[in-house]
Image (cartoon, rainbow, N blue to C red):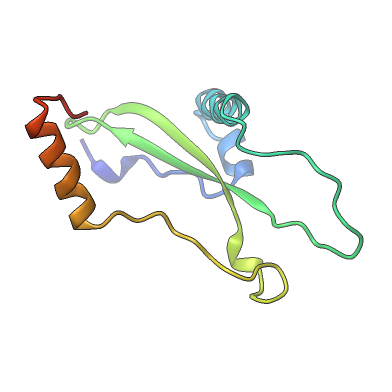
Length: 117
């Protein structure tokens, strides 16, 4: 099969008007449900003069080794590139792990005969 046969939607409108619109709709609802269950956001009043950060759906079709559709994935992401340093934010943080941290965890797993998943 041709691996390029399936093209992922690049917008919400493309997804809901595609042949797989019901599948895309289901995974979008699953994503929103997951965000709600995990308390990803708090609904707050927007202060005067503040512009909200937009969001966008990102779509991905996962294929099996034969090129057949295995599943559909989607994520709702913030358009953080619209923010301006000093106006919309002061600092940025990125969760990263160091090799030393991984080594410590692995040593503890080995020492206490644990299973690591």
